[in-house]
Length: 341
Image (cartoon, rainbow, N blue to C red; front, side, top):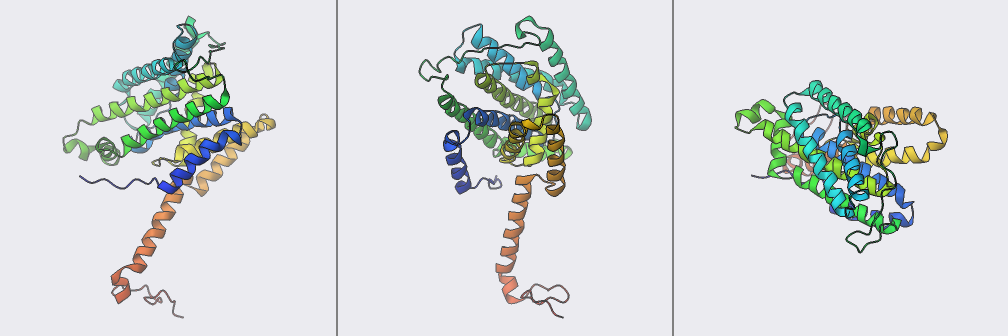
């Protein structure tokens, strides 16, 4: 079985990695860490929406539940940061599997509403449970040395740890998409009845994809706790789910780099337009509307579509049939592209 080539271009990937390595020397490291966390959250949602065709309105429950569990494990139980993050990821994956058992039985808007309902349920549970701290959340989460060696109290050291986590998360998403399992997910997205007729256990594939997506969202939430040293109700609120959806749409659904671009735009606007107070939401809305109208496939999606059109155009001009004149020109146009008067 052959698979389509990956859209990731090595020169661009190498350039992007170099830019991320030197970024904290040019930009405030905490800003970059926030960007990486939300890019990973958007990537987790994009995995579900873009490659399975399931739109979730409740990814904040995985992001926030992992944040709470990681914060409690690190602060109260004294876990190492790595174990605290793993505890958060495991919690998000378990919650994803439980939620998915019910949600994947429906499609379209019904699936989205079920995920939203579960997310609201998790929000109110987080508000009532004693260990979450209610409206105050879990604050002052300590940044203990990672493995007893790396001083996470240093923002530069923490940045490279977060960067490593984000790269591993994106690599996992990439391997899921460009694997036999990922090809089955795309087949389910494109034509579920045909996938069923071929003998695939569609609900099993959906459940596994949903669980993996939840685990990636949990990884983002647990990492965010280490960065900001706090877990609050905002982490499980609908606003986080909405931001993840908007980031995916801005960057481009069904693209690997789209979540990064979408997160870059959204987080940058939140940070650098904060001085406009309540006008921030209006400015964000205007930008989102303009981007959606000008780039229906998202910024990265439109760029990839443009490159495909350009490549197809070059291949058409260079094909032997074109050089022999076998292709019938359009009315009023010669085989060499010269328009007749």
